[in-house]
Length: 282
Figure: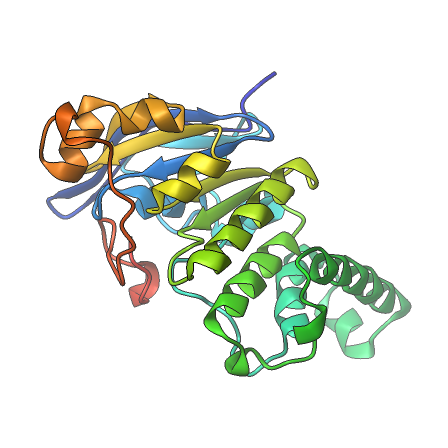
């Protein structure tokens, strides 16, 4: 079996700041691979390198054996890589159904003239997209909110809608950037169930950036710890949490101080400027 995604000696620099420095790892099909580390470790920057929002200063990313670091974000999305964001990025004045259809439309290949005339091919494509989105709505139990405007939904439901929009793309690889951020204990528990179902029922590989070590330990097959853009440890959740370098990075102490805590920062960032001047923490 070959890895689904490989990061090969990735580095990226913003001025004098090295946000990611010579990082390498492999992600295998149908696993949950988590990136952990203190704020500023470079976790979301790695997501931006994978999804094409940043170009690496050195190194490259491969997906299904092909280099993708030179591709535009929309081209990478069409290959089968979907992502969510730390800060929810939804169309507030559109319905849940419409937001999910936006995710599916990245696979639309009809021309503008066909769209204008709403040709039979366009109608057939729209019907197929609608079926896919309805399946996602049922999978995530969003039927009650299907025709509701996103602006009026609770924060926890919005997080699930954003997850649904990514799933509507029918991805092979799903990048989840702090999926439990802003959720209460019960909502975090539900998010863990969704992630497990996405892996086991849908067969989708997941890379997750997460601060909640309880969630990380529960759903992760392997964990990759970073600090200041460099690798600290790779292994199971328990192996990584007990690693001296990881304990030092989280607590500034020694192994006797115990495992890393499970912080829930209100708006902590993760190294490097946001793409396009947006509000996304990196």
